Amino acid sequence: MLPIIGMYFHDHSSMRPETQPVYNDCGITKNDNFVIYNHLMGEIYIFSKTSMKKLMAGALLSTAVLGSFGYGSVNEVAAASVQSVQNGVANSNVNMRSQASTSGKVVERVYKGDRVQILGSSSGWYKIKTSSGKQGYASSKFITQSNSSSNNSGSQTPSTNASVEKVIAAGMKYLGTPYEFGSNRNSTRTFDCSAFVRRAFLDGAGITLPSDSRAQGQFVKNKGNAVTNINQLKRGDLVFFMSYRGNSASAYAGINKANQRITHVAIYLGDNKLLHTYSKQSGGVLVGEFGNSWKHRFLYGGSAL
Image: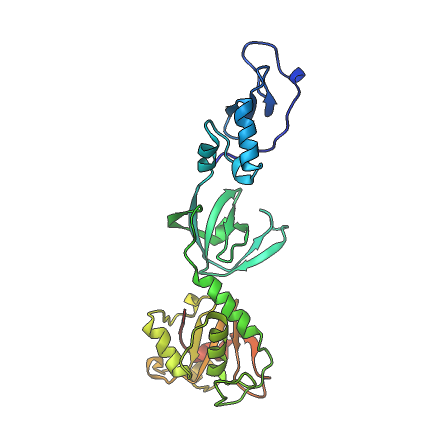
C-alpha cells in the first residue's frame, strides 16, 4: 500500500506550459489529467478526468482508496488496497495508544500473550489491531512478529482473547457478592471460589465448567493448557492453589506440589492481579494481589477456553 500524505489541487497557473508537465503533490495537467506525486515513494500516478471521476464516485474517497492509488480501473485500485497483515504477540503487558507516542491517550491495555495484527510501523511503534477490533499504537519493543500473516480482506478467526474479556467482564459484575462455602451453583446470591469461576465462564462465554475446583483443574489439564511457571500465565487463565501453610517460602519447602490437592481457584487478570473469592472476612468477590502467600501455594494454571 502506498501512503498519500495529503490531497490538494493547484490551479492551472501553477503548471508549466512545457510539453512535459510538472507534478507538484496533487495537480492537473493542461490536458486535464489528474496527477498525484507520492513523496515517500518518489513515484507519479496519472488518472484521466473520466477515470478520476469514477474513482472518486465509486470509492467515496474512502481511506482504502486514498491509501493505494495506481494505474488501472477502479476495481484494480480497490484490489490493490487489500494488504497482507503481519500477526504479532505481546511479549509483555503494554498500553495501546491513540498515536505513536507516549503522550498518546491509552485506548486499551494489551496483555502478555495477547495476539494482535500489525498494520504498519513507524519510528519504533507498531500500529496494531486487537482481537476486540480496536486499533492503536504500541511500542515495537513489546510486540513480537510471528511468522504467519493474514489477509485483512476476509473474515478473522475468532480469538480467545475476546472470550477472555467477556468472562472477566462477567466476573466483575459480581464484585462484592458474599462468600459462602458450598454455595448453590444455580444461585448468584453467594459464591465460593469454584462457583464464582463457574458463573463467570457461564455468563461470559456460555461454557459450563465442572462444579468444584479440582474438577476444573482437571478440565484445564485435559485441554493441554496447564503451565506450572507463573510467568507463563496469561490474562483469563484459571489458577489453582494448594492449602495455606504460611506466608513464607520455607513453609512450603520440600513439598511435592504435583501431589497436592487443589483447594482454591481464581481468574488471573495479568499485572499480578487475581479475580476471586475465598472468605467472608475478605468481603466476597474481589480483585486482589497475586502476592507471595498465593504464589507459594500456586500449583498450576491455564486457559479453560
